Length: 391
Image (cartoon, rainbow, N blue to C red; front, top):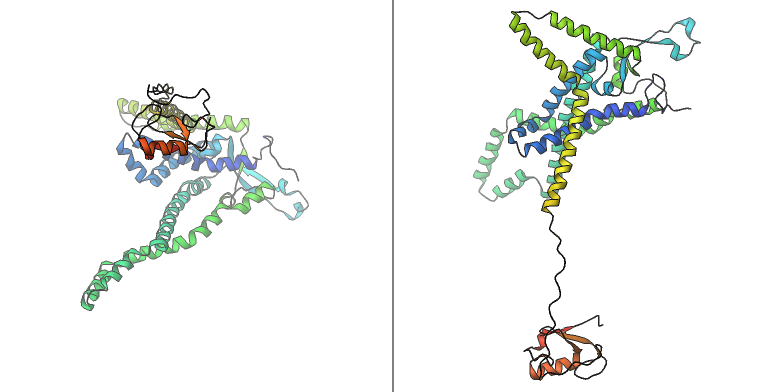
């Protein structure tokens, strides 16, 4: 069996479909990160992060509605040059001997299919993100309870040390405070936490994607199969038809403007701005996120260079201590002990001067005279250090 990995034919590859499917989530993560960084300087943007799901759902609703209305494709599919086409399967008794592909005809997308496509592209991901947030909260609460125990239960146990009347009053107070709505919400959250992993595994549709990879089906997801839509590459004629359709739609919208001339001018200017935003939304969003990341990397590297500690050259060594006139002279060989004039055994240094001796020699001398034998600087046995590397 041959797998389609190139860009030939109208049938898109598995990698194109996977990239188009993952683009909205990647774009959402990039926008969330960008707004989070900007919120450090503009605190009012934290309100956008508080309603992240609603904000992104509204944004995708505008983009997906405009894209499906003008190009018969989703926002991500338009970026990859793909189009959605309705599949009409005609099976007759006389045509049973024909190839399956010859009985499939493609046509334009109807309004009902566009509306349901918006539901699958915007509404269902919104509810899925809400369920995912509930699942994460319940999982964190369960993990915390397994590690630290239930806080409410520990408070109840601490109250049990009191008399029976106080415990009964606290229990009745909790029962009255815990409303039916709160208990119902907690029960629903537990049901969502239990069922969400299975729901998530079912909506991922790995089986459909595997069948699509093996060319066993023309539908990449069960949502497309339910809508009767296949994703195909856009031809040159379709791109020309799309441009003419967009021009016709916009001219009709301008003709429907009503009111005095100044109001029509204002409405026309607003429509022109809206058209410009929608036309450049695809490349503009991605380019803006890419440019923001580049600027962040640039300023972050500059800040790191400015805040990095300056590396200075090592200072010169201090001058060696002077040998006292009444002190013991140093031998010409640096490996000999100045006290016994023999090869140093267990070399040890006196910290006040830095000269090295045999440990037995310097310990005996310092214990008796309380000074360095070379510089005659006062010292004690606590200032003798053993050396494990002798030159």
